[in-house]
Amino acid sequence: MLQINTYYKYGYSTGYMEHDYKSNFGFVKNANSGYTGLQVAYGLTKRITIDLDGGYYLNRTQNFSFFGDSYTLNGYGGSAITLSGRASVLKDTVNDVEVTLGVGLKMPWSRQPQIVDGVELTEDVQPCNGSYGLSLRAFIFKEFDKSGVRLFLMHNTTLSTINDRNYKEGNNYTTSLYASKTFFKNLTLIGQVRNEVRDYAFRDDKVVSSSGGFRFVFVPQINYSFKQKYNLSVLYELPFYQYYYGIQLHDQYAFSVNLNIRLGLNKKVNAECEKPK
Image (cartoon, rainbow, N blue to C red; front, side):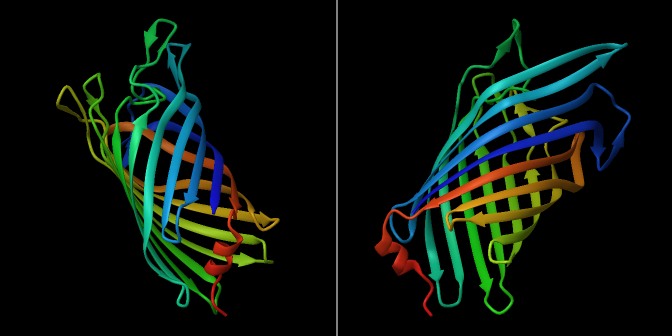
């Protein structure tokens, strides 16, 4: 099975938060980003899959306003490439339970900082942080035949190294719980609650006080499948609780459009993977 997923994501931020309340601090008027991603997965065996993920920022923008004058910082370009493998450690097709574990290497698109109009961009708008990383993943799936409800629990830990500018992004820990149900054969509604935790960043071996924190995000999603191998989905990300270390720009919302394609390259394997009747 070859799976291809491509998507576009737009995010918007404005205002500042200190811990979990609004701050009067003002520096960046607002910020937005447009990101395109490509994920390719190939099943080597019934239990082992390799993945290749990559992404490109169409823009990563911060807008400033000083005494009536406007100023903009804008980064763009490749972000990172992650090569990973995952193995199904438990796959019970009778009871519809699956547990998968994975590990991957995150590689920067570029080790050099981006310079625009003679100015080196800040870390907040750099399309690539220039550091390597390690990705650890876990996936648990359970389907309930009578109700048609499917539950997914996914966790991803990303550990980052120090880049050439002696800057280290905070390690990131993301846990998501999904519930999905299909209607009218090809229309699926998905609800997701996601928890994101980010450690402090470090610059020159010193803690960046206004970095890191955690948040909870509610993500409703609608998915339409057609021709048995295409899935088109739209989702909206709404943070409903955010806690920042220090003072940081406040994330408001994000939305994504995704196209997923699954190609069965081996009919015999497809038949073997069908659920027993």
